[in-house]
Amino acid sequence: MITGLGKVEFSDVRALRGPLLVVRDVAGVGWDESALIRLDSGEVRHGLVLEVDRDLAVVQVLEGTDGMRPDGTRVVFAGEPIHIPVGPGWLGRVCNGRGEPMDGGPPVLADRRAPVSGFPLNPSHRDPPAEPVLTGISAIDALTTIVRGQKLPVFSLAGLPHLELATQVAAQATAGDAPFAVVFAGMGLTHTDAATVRDALEERSTAGSLVLLINTADDPVVERILTPRLALTVAEDLAFESGRHVLVVMADMTAYAEALREVSAARGEIPGRRAYPGYLYSDLASLYERCGRIRNREGSVTVLPVLTMPGGDITHPVPDLTGYITEGQIVLSADLHAAGIYPPVDALSSLSRLMRKGAGPGRTREDHLDVAAQTMAALARARQAGELVELMGEDALSATDRAYLEFARVVQRRLFDQRRGEARSLNGTLERVWEALSALPRRELTMLPETFLDRWFRGSERGGES
Image (cartoon, rainbow, N blue to C red):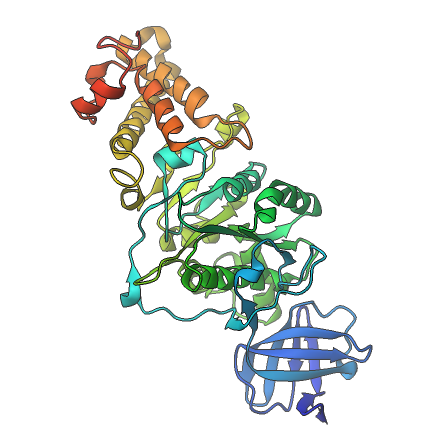
């Protein structure tokens, strides 16, 4: 080892494996410690200690190991985990997955620093999620309302517009009159997708209410593992130190999990389900559980992870484990997408388990929860009527069943289908729900109080005639 600049530099690099390097004869080095890696060319890269075994340390190199040679590499350990500056200076900035500027501006500077791994939060200090985050998207706001402090994933398939939906949510979401910000973490994006995301979010970024972190598919795989942690660290400070309600959109978590699997394979770990590491559940939980609200603090962190289900398999480890950790799901449908519906949200497969904490009297509108429950029940009945049509034909249906089919058509056409970039008010969304419900006989709306029916119902006792 070589001593220089007041630091101890370890030069006995034993091996380079994928994004990892193994250093021998180390002392006083701990797990999760950050490191600077100096090459003979003068280039400096950054690393993170993954494992320490006696005098060996395994370091993941954030910029990758391309061009590195064992005999030309020296490592300096920082004595602490990776820290980043935190504060409002992140707002309006566009950075890569390591937090380095991509917008031509200076590095983000701040008086405070925080570890990207986050701080453990005592569960007894948490407040339950409450109050809505409105997205301007009818299918979400009406039936699967997002609640401040909630973790609500979007399950999708390859080829569906999940990234477009995530970007639209990031561009339109609000918390009413409360201070609000969005942190968007894109992982494994193509350069075309990255450019599209930047263009779509430019207005919000210019307004100083967005932090955009972009990791592209050709960036080092280890950076993909750091990106969501950096995003959450920035969000926690904006929420709990600056009092903002922060929505963190993370797309695509499947790309993150695949990066985790690649690093695990490079470490020679024993694989679990479908070659993912056995600690995939705890790793995902370490990200998702960083959302929430803290007692006596004004802000909140809400997480909207987006993930694709390989082969459409909802039992795949990534969506399966995500479902155990999170509080519901928004599911996108290939059939609705093929029918030209945007966003193609499958309402009957989607669920926000905390919706009652963020919707209803005093939060959204007094009829919201009852209308949502009635709509879901009617959609289920309409699906049954559709199955009968496939078996017997529409002529065999009763007038009531035909009304349910008409209800489903109105819901798709007037509520679910929405122009890209269109932001609907909640009142406008609920008016569209009542328009669809008015296609049904009034006697079928058994989940709605008479006071609501007298005020908003525009149909008739017999069917949808006005």
